[in-house]
Length: 322
Image 1 (cartoon, rainbow, N blue to C red):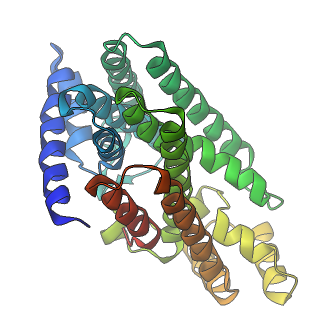
Image 2: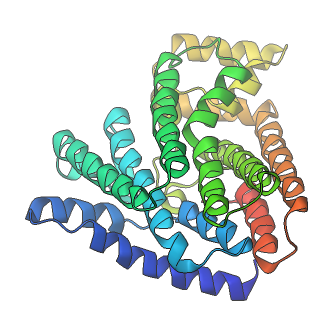
């Protein structure tokens, strides 16, 4: 990735971290502790990075973009706190989740508090298009979680079902991070559509790769409990593709998933079958296809260093190992 822009982005993300903590100040010591713990966990800070790069590509200033970049990371963190409660996750980014370290009630309140502060920041633009954009993001996030919950343990889940879930949970959010950068830069409709498509495609690639890492990753690298999706009854793309085969491997996998409990031993056998079926390679190919679509969508945008960084970011997403 462009080293100068990467260093600049890292410096700006560090400033956003300070900005976020300032926004989340509370007179309540416990709320302050919960919020600090949630953000101390770190993370890729992909969403604020996309907002900054998209806006700067089209001429928006850092000062204009900062509140939106902070808000998208705050929304993301709030949803992670709620996700961890729903999934009873013990780990997030290599350490105890808020709901495990404290309890679910405190995690809910912390998530709600962070979410409300994010929308306070967005309302400061006094723009209905910005507020409507992220109101849609949060409602679709909820819809995605509902769809996923409805499809738990569903051996009949289709590729279209899966794509709808990841579009609601990830792709729309990342596309909105890119789009808001364009909105704040007064982009044309053509430019906005290009940024939106780019974000949607890398969103799909990001979630597909994330789901793949649940079968191939290392907990120390990913910071998450490998095999968690399987134990939670979430059948993601590697399993869906393996089940679609018309051979004995698919039949064995179907029988195993239908009759066995979600133990570590069962997961190891499921993982072996999924890899043996070739579904892992097909899943990665799907992520690479999304990456190519993302890069293609940027062709109508100005040929500036930020565009090159967005292209390189897309390639990193489909090949990441953490």
